Length: 287
Image (cartoon, rainbow, N blue to C red; front, side, top):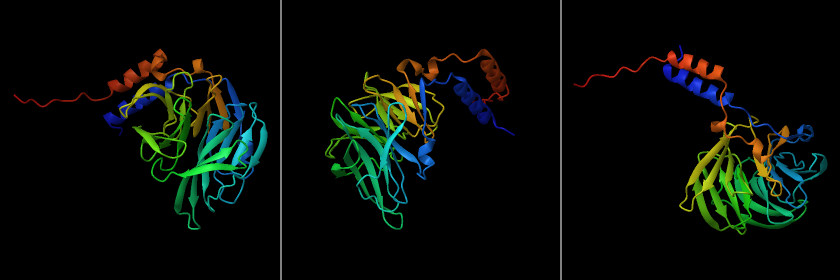
């Protein structure tokens, strides 16, 4: 029989899910990439110079691991980046810098699929040339997310396991770290500088960054698509996200915080009825 705590949790979850979902203004089908034998798509970023969409992927069998799409979702090309990640390695999170080039978190594995090296590599836009690289073993374990800060000319690398975001220079020096509850990927809003983080449950949190090493939660958004990676268009301010099947784009005014969305009355009544079933807590008399 469900416990009182479970009933209460169910009611709270229902109220959250009943909040109006953020509706995307544009959707692109990318299942054709997985149809070519490619495993999980890990990284996603928008080229600020032309609006092209770039994705990176796992590639256990030596397949292509970089995919470039036009602003309309058409495949322009795919290639394998010229950086050795071993037989089971991958290119994970990515972020475009100030110009027509991007940074990628690369993880190298040996023949036994043991992780032996983590690097951040700087690639030209076509992923044909490695411009530079630096060791990333001291921060951003897993390289779950990456964003480029246009104001400080630094990278933000998030770690789901460490529950933190590390700010590093483009040559690998650690500048600052922030604690974060959880994050698969991060992106910076070009209009506010706020950090957006994809949570494990698929919701997206918006934070302001404090100089004292703290993050302050500003809002939470329900896009209901389980995004693995996100990025902002620095020109239009639209938020993009991908989940291995689709890329979706949201205008800024389409991102409605959960707390500001009215919940349908019938949902409140249902929740109230459910909560009424929760037994009252009996307090022991002490006097």
